[in-house]
Image (cartoon, rainbow, N blue to C red; front, side, top):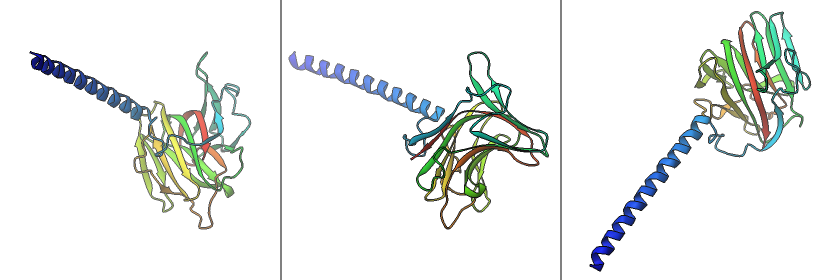
Length: 242
């Protein structure tokens, strides 16, 4: 009788433990999947991007006007517009950039740290392409050298390496917000671009302007290139260094 009761007890405990383990597994899988969907678990293999150097949410700028300090605007032609966009009462602001060919426009801010010659620089931000096929973001070194960039083109995010090869970082739906991260290794002169947490072909790409003598990074810019048309918005810019 005791033996039979013991067997029943062990069997019940086993079934209970098995159900608990199964529930735990399903819960962990769900949390991991959600993290991948939001891009929160993929940060160039590290969860700590380093020291926060620069942040911009545009709330301190006047709606309908170009962004103020520390941003500089470089406008070629009459059809480029950079201004602060209000999302509505209590919803904050974002930055809007628009240009039609043959105009082009660049809006840039220098890093408060000055030029960085070592470590890893990460620019993380949200972006929305409204229309057109040209809206770019770039980390710039001394001499206005474009080193690490992401270009929203149609329904793809593209980048380029030092051999001028175009690489696909990921796809998106125009008119929807996505998260971009440009992670640049200054010592190795390589960079990765993550679209909603995933790099596609854009991991450890050689800098566009690779320098044998070594490189640096000193500013961040948003742009619409010459002979191109596009419009979009950016928000929640964070720049880290480690």
